[in-house]
Length: 298
Length: 294
Image (cartoon, rainbow over all chains, first blue to last red; front, top):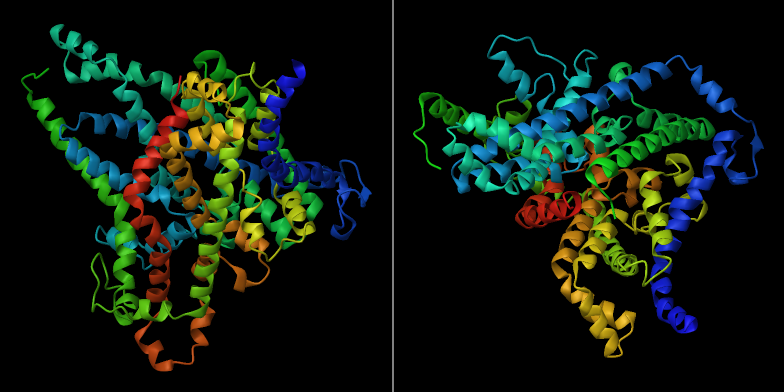
């Protein structure tokens, strides 16, 4: 009996084999490679051939004068993005829900989803052009008498430009989840409210908002894991040395010291710090989501 | 539910329409502007005369770009990676989702395996160990470096396995009764039944492959092996030096760096824009499948 069961299960193991092999090489072997954060790593000697130095790399990073600023930039940009990424889609979804015509609603949706599908290379190219000193944005603001602003080269502006353009790219796509939640609200509640004399605003406040609240809270909880993710793709395609002060984040820093300056061990140490903190945050957020919303990823 | 709309309501409706339409226009305007620049004459583009419509319409920039060897080579690499990457990762996604969709009573190891997959989403070795691994297996400068490391998209696996779990158990049982094994059940029954879900996952993969640029940038030593998006990054951020070496000087008078740049940006976005109606439909399905369930 057990043998028969085993034979029946065998194909399932075989099916998983190729994918597991890929993960073993490209996900798990690099995880083992984290040991180089505790070494003075020399690439030719492999992950285990270099001299061990304990926590020296971490101490070195901790004492770097720029490190505090980089962590601060990362959290500052990421938290603003999380906040905007929650509020804007909810508001737009509610407004879309108030549109009477199905056709206009669909047209608006089609237009606001588009930027999500383009890469940050493409959008970076577009934004560098429109936000330049002679770009169309400055030209437009000039109509109101504003002096040209170097949006991508000025430390006072750069973090906010990152947040604004990131929201621009993804708010439309973010509405999808809330629009789906809106359709699942029980329509009889509205009918009852109308009989009780509630106007649209009252209905929104007492039926619609509570109706989508579980989804809003769930999205909020899940975004907790992104507190150290300020968006490498975006920053990397928009920043320049002038704005390192306000725009350099952990991921771009790891890239530069690791792959440009070839300080492999130091870069790995910084990356490890970020991965561990992120893992903790994600575990906590998924734990909360599971406990209170029964959310499971699989 | 029709009420007599008061003045406040009417004002709100007017505001709402205006606001949402303005917002939609704002989403597209930068792209339209860049498109207009790419079709304008070099003097109009450099003089900042172009707004949302081409000035002195010309397709010279496109003619130049579509004959530019670097651009065409990068496009070939991208087409290769899309083709290879999609085939490979669809195959692996199907093969992985099926066993992981089984109930624990049917497949005792299921949870253990599932965690092995999910763990890779939650934690990773970081940039440097990842790069060193790919280097040490000798894949730098090879097309495999662009498709193999990401060949198991765990998020897609989860989408598909959730779909498989939604299929009635009786299907599988009747197949087993008829003497079919797991392989037959998967290819003859599950795959045909999950074509819509597979289309969603497939489109995710195509867009992902088309849009990837960072892997090309760091894993290809020679710019000749850059996929299109990595190549675009080098011309967008830096000066496009290849233009200065162009032997056709008469051509240079009609072209400017800006029109050539914008033309390439637009061409890099074009397939996504063309496939957009499809994308919109299937992506929404995927998002709704993936994020708001039970």
